[in-house]
Length: 269
Length: 264
Image 1 (tube, rainbow over the protein chains, first blue to last red):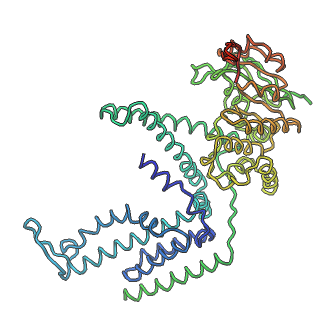
Image 2: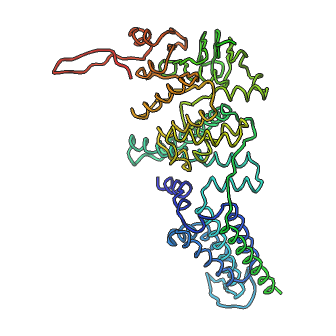
Image 3: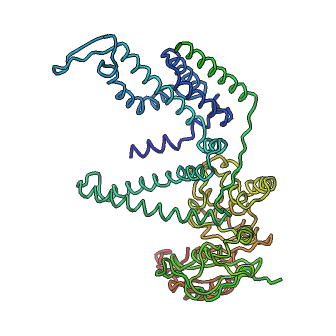
């Protein structure tokens, strides 16, 4: 139940996107394009300090968009960076990143040496992941999901793909509710403790039931689309309007991109 | 010009070729009429409405709409398909099926956009409809966040925006509170008064008189067992009882037990 609530809360909550913060007030097309620029920049930058500055800038934008920093840090640090830490740990050691020794220790008779270069690449990797994840999460929580889908359409992603994604999103909620209700119904009849074999049986039955429901739903929704004139190529409205603030933001982001990119090239040389 | 909109003759239909859903159904609907199709759950009402909307086709018999037979081939003709979809709108029984777009606004816009209507015209109709149905504060909400009554209103709006000649509604008041039911009934009566043909399936006998010129009664055998004026049909207690539309209800007044037929 906790997992289902988390799923509902994290995917379907439009609460933050509806707030009147800085990022929420921007045109979604321009916001998406500029965030895309930032993410490209993060992938190219090899200087930890510059990356840290971008991360701090992301946190600043979070605050300016009326999003609690505690919530945002929890949301970004919980899963993906944890995994990236696991990937980064081996890079600390001389086995994977040879170089100048920083510290060494014995583990079950094997001598492991941490190198300066190893620490640098592991730190660079983790900061790069957390900064890019933070920008992506910030974009997704400050933009309503249907606006993001419309933006995809503007960027020439095929309409059928965009529409299918939108419908998946729409119906996942329905299925989450079905699973939730089924779980409550089972619990009301069996109590909290059931034999694991019975549990397996219930889960298998649930999966089959859900599959059948989704199959039927698919046919019914298609009928509803046909009934309203759908003939294979959906038509939609695009009603975005960019203002002066959006153009300033675009200019600012482009300037940051150019300056940092140039600065990064200088470091390389 | 013929006044007949739908003419179904000896229609038989079975799901997957084996689960019979309609048997020997004959029905004729004329322009501007209010038609009710009543019957217990699983009696074939929804199947008939889907057939009138050209979503499924008879295994035997014919259904004609505006003088042309409804068949799969007919809908391959883009002009006919577009013309038919503009003329006939169906409000599905389950609004979760009908409302598949990310927001209420997009859902209402979906139909007319597919049918190639002018954007200016769509916006004008949209403004009128949201005022009539009081949907102004729901436009940016996701359909799954709405109450059943709100979903039902949005589903009706998403069909009415096409301004169809025929409005078909599959149990439009099922699960609604009395006030929302009243709003929907008033709307249907108003739409009919403006010339629209209204076809409604229901098993809520309280609303039948208001929304019908002719009532068709379906039996559990998936057949139309009687058709007639609502006054006549609703007086026929035996007919309603046999077809699971009323039940015998017992309650007490001042210590005396009363037993009488009861409908919902």
